[in-house]
Length: 423
DNA sequence: TCTCCGATTAGAC
DNA sequence: CTAACGGTCTAATCGGAGA
Image (cartoon, rainbow, N blue to C red; front, top):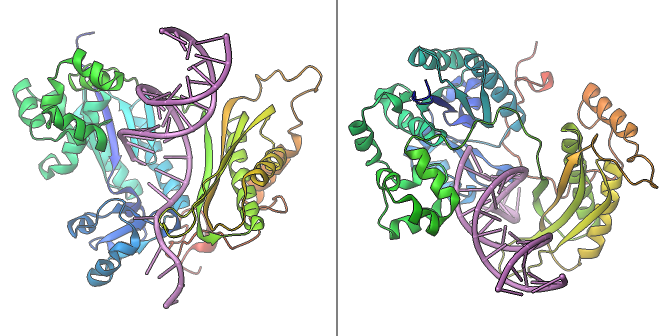
């Protein structure tokens, strides 16, 4: 039993954001489509047609304006409410196919399929069910390690012959070699731009070369992550599936502004809003934070303007998740770093030193950790009557910094008011 | 010189 | 027409301060 290879599945939604939009827009099923990042900044999801037109991942929107016009590319702002809801539907279906699921990102899930005798049929079935019940097409990659499952998924996506399912465990060693020799190292999970360059200087350009490199010397040169990657490529499962959604160790809320702002009032308004969001996330995972950082950035793409990117770290003597307390400290921090005469493009807050709210013993003389009753009521009201029903006075009341989102589709699945059809 | 810790980097999506 | 290059998260590594 122990000698049987693990069968780890990696299910990845195809062009996820584009696919979500297409579910409600059958008219764009065969058209080039792209989805822009926050602030309508960069292309972060592309349909195959858009990829074929040469639209690169992450390209700034203004740089492809001409192609958008010439080819009639359909452009959408990010609609995270919709994507999150579609993701939940997909993940929920997938969860029925294994008791061990790790939801790795909004559009990817690992499943442990080890021990199932009918892996090929299961993979096929989950793929068909997801597309039938949600409209989202997915590919399934299977391998003895997470890294090889990811690589299998890449093969499934690239080779139409696989029909969206590929299991590297079914290949002979010879076949594996011929497959891996045709894939460049940068397709490997954990190998990014820098490593690709360094590896190439070492004469390593294909996945096969990387797999067969000497572990000891590679570790010495590139570190422990590289060693794990190589072992995983050899079929040794070094990275376990992480069943439980683990509590975040750091919570960031930051945003680029729709246009740069120069007054402290505008930055205060944005910052209090970011703190509200971050504190809500903190409470949702039942945590409190012991450290807060506040930062400001001017527009780094405007080299001719004076640049100033300050930040301040604020230790919280009494860890808390109370929005009002956190906002008070954030505004004090802002006062200490804000300088007029600059145009700020982005601001944000980082909560860290996060621990469990219930485990915190508190200061003997300070009494119990800050009474969180008021925040509980606050959260309950917003949950019941809708986000933003109650908020603190300063939170996001100005519009000056709001991000651009000019092409957002309706929240089809979660908001009656946005449905395009009148009943 | 060693250790600790915050800051930076690299990677993922 | 404006003006126009994202947001979170983790882990490893770097490098300075203090012991």
